[in-house]
Length: 423
Image 1 (cartoon, one colour):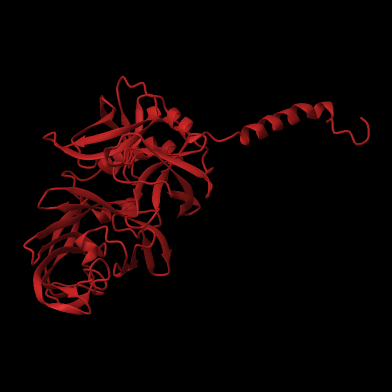
Image 2: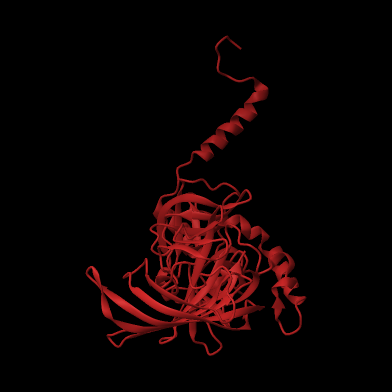
């Protein structure tokens, strides 16, 4: 070989050819959005759930991951007696195959279903700043494409437990797909921080490989529960309801308008722990380790958040039956109304959260709300009543009911109930 020649030795040529091919593949142009959508749209379906009387409950999305198998969020299927998957005018009955509620991933099975499965992105390949696309059914609008960036990898212990994205995730999108620019599945879209700008989140697709084993382990654990289904949290070992929250864990509540019966899932997901402060949903809710509220900037829990007193609805370090206190405060969100309330703690009793029996104390608040006008407050109040169940074991409110009869004769009557802790 002449000096300065760039031709490789014969034994290097196969390796050089392989590297050239790999380089060309790695630098291949990303799919145009219309091409990507055409490739994937047949693999993302809508989910509709129904109660025992066939009344509609929730709507969501699901992604085909194998022949006759789709994955959605477990919270989409919560409380459903049956559910279907649909696209355009085609509907299939579906059954639950592998539930993993701790990660909010549920695999469902559909018979005689031929929709093509998607390709999963390589594990650990997600990169902050890469272009991503969300496909789902927001607010019932089937097969909607959204574009954005992967804006963060959230989690702990060296594991990305959540993908943060600017691609929109709205009600109905839960269970849809988050794809890279090659059309590979990066994650399952799950929730957005309400009033938090472009703060949307997906569960990494690499978790899907563990779904069958985790589901079978959880079902086996439930089979060992005491007869009758009631479990004391002390009996749950490694999955105790009362274990400290870790980054990526989430508190799932259901908010109900008791006048209309409308139910809305409310999820507070822990994203950061700094000292003794826990930050949920991109900092829109911050609590102390003892459960007392530091700040709320996005009232996704309705009255539970918008009317929250300083420190929250259980603001004392130790709450006991018979305690009383008086509150006079102006809320920090919404219309910043003045609240004047008297609190009373009742006797201890029990309630269940996700099948676990908990001791709780009932805290009753009675008083008035005064509207603000200009720089002063109205002297005419409107009655406001709250009943909250507080769990000393969890150090948080597990059920909340509020009634407010405003001067306009309209009534707010809503509840918020903890249904499970996602781990």
